[in-house]
Image 1 (cartoon, helix red, strand yellow):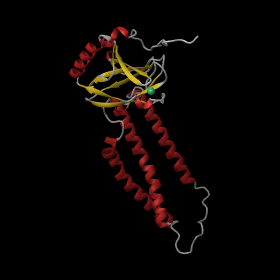
Image 2 (cartoon, rainbow, N blue to C red):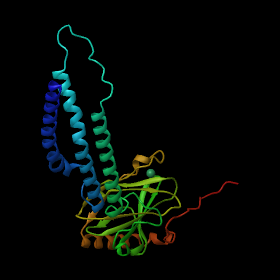
Image 3 (cartoon, protein in one colour):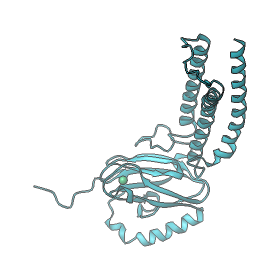
Image 4 (spheres, protein in one colour):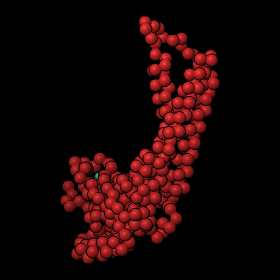
Length: 280
Ligand SMILES: [Cu+2]
């Protein structure tokens, strides 16, 4: 028994030291590089969640690795000794400790995750459907941007700027943006990775997602729902630019799109385009 507890003490000491080294490395060295970054408040929240989850998982993984390594080295049978050790049938203190620790960890993460999702992440960029139950403060003044998916491209309409349609997405920095994501044909998914948004684009549905942009920079836009032959073609690079940069981009787009405007249907939360020809 004395021998067992000296093993346990050594394993515990190695585990504590490796955990004490790993946690600061995860928070301060790995953390800033975890996805999706800090381009928007929502992306930051997701990055913090990834840091917390990694930091919580690290001691568990380390306990397994330390024990595994220790057992390989110290408990290795030597010479001709090939017999298995005596089977262990139940160990109430270990089982109780394991049940309590894992239940507490999982329940604490569930409570924390739910709170973050509702209190700060406002749906975490996932799209809240046509009637958001958790709009962020200041949602009434948000910049409205409609995102339209179709096989196989994205276009954007800005109801606050004459509902013009643009082929690229520029957003002003430091602004609350309200995306209205829809589709003209099949289900797509508007995935602006660095913005922390992944919202389904469904025909006939106005799916609303909020983001608070921060600094200028570029972000990728992909379709995250297999939508046919050229699904992979639905790739663009969007820009977060200064407020003045956005105003001048918008002015040039309005000028360029003025001629196209008469071909556009009136702005709506969703569209059902008529087929060019009907059968029968
Ligand atoms: Cu698609």
